[in-house]
Length: 309
Image (tube, rainbow, N blue to C red; front, side, top):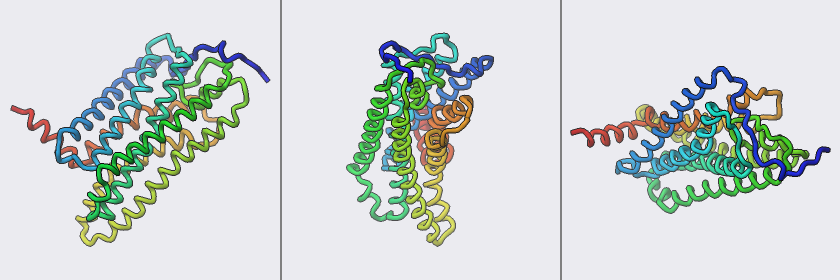
């Protein structure tokens, strides 16, 4: 078995999108445009929810927290990715890599559990409407936010500590950021225990919230179907449609990336999956909630209407 002193490896180098060498400028322009839309969309949602009193409800409180988390999540990954597309310097220090992985894991898991909290909020709103304001009070909302962020922090500390205790021999990360598995592959020793730990954590932080959201929507749909009027059913389902769309794409991409068995997938296929959950998913949140949500669209019109002379 190869032995290597970890201190001899002081930095890593991203392979990035090297297999798309002739298209890197095109990729840079496309990803930069998506990144700008993502930042602008999420920031606008947070500001609109903050200043429009009609949106001062638990549902939009959770949405503003999700938009904030998505913004920070994209800041951790995309600037580094954009830099690697136009710069020859694709290096990152071990400390920088560990920091990026820590914040990536923290916000990714925080997003998963925020979506779960939003699912619970929709369940209470539709299945227990008369007790909604009592159940979803400020203390409960704050507690759900705290639990989501705490789980993200605990998992991030666990993952980063386990990965960066490994001795590293390789220096080329077959990715465009410091994701867990590509960095583990650079170790000199067998990483089976680390891979099992990563799989267990992935199952817990993906399947558990997915299961909770699924149960919420089974109860929600059964309640909606009992509503007498077609208009009432349509209105009730409309309040859930945006959240359900984001949930399906978010959990779907994450599950494909972290729960799929080891396969012969090419690096390009893995990168395509990664681009989906690091670039597309954060953009999906403001797009879906602004285009499909009447209350957000009305709030936008009210805010911009006030600014008109």
